[in-house]
Length: 426
Image (tube, rainbow, N blue to C red):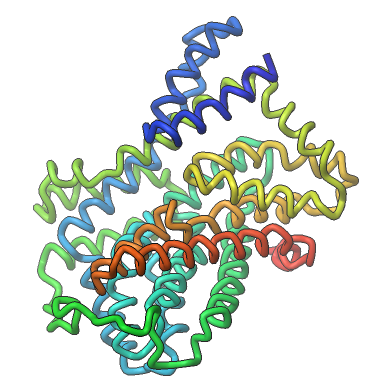
């Protein structure tokens, strides 16, 4: 059953990609079927349902759906860029840093991916920068701090790591992510020749009139309350060590009682497809692990890896898987449990945190691909701002895809340099 269970994961991903159906929902269905085939009771299959993960995802996304609904985070982002806009020569660096900062205070990661690209690319274009480069830096800035332990992605990854028997690596993972995507940002700046101003992606772009500078309003009462609750929520999770998802729900209730947003709109703003993608894959992986599928995967990877190819193999495999699924739902829960045994089979050349960081960073490098959320939002922002022709849009698509491939390869080999070992003692 080990082979069948592992093949079921490939089947689920392939079916989801080609039918464009939610992989998580398919995973839940396959989990129960796989359980029946192998003699695992339905009760045991349900016991493998990632309840804590579900609460984390729903609670955090629900809170940030409220924040998105009343415009507090979007206005905060615009005000920050209005402040930094005067430093045109340093704008690419400002984009990266502010995107990283916004992601720290928006642990749901939605603002950095969904809201910022249109803002940063529009302002950057007016300053003479290549809007594609600015969009890439926006996503990489968000990725640099996406693994904050008070955020939905960082909290979820830490839960997966803990379940695999590893100690708390939250700080090291965050710092290694920052290192990786800062390097990615520098390479992107060089690749796009970012020091050359007054250049544009296609030389003949025109900014739509509705994308120009706007007069920013002051924060209203609902937005001030939302930002206050955001700060208090982050402090509670960090210092009181409360459950992230349930803590977010507590502050969400306060916001709803304070009429900071409409409850119905908040529920509609929750990305249910993403939630079910994560928990569905998680439930299926629980069954696969019980049947020995993940042990088999570790053996297969070990048979084709050496001390020098193990880290690149894990990183690139994680990146490839992330082209077709969320990193937090596909490669991270699939590959993290194999790290310790793979390391042992290859002579323990690496510290486990190095390989874990390789898997996580490799997974999120694919975020700039137009097939993933980050790249798709950059492409959408480009379309909104410049109304490109079909040919121009295809060129942008290709450039984003190329960036994703190049950075994924670099992320895969970076662990061999020992750079992820620097923060191991923290």
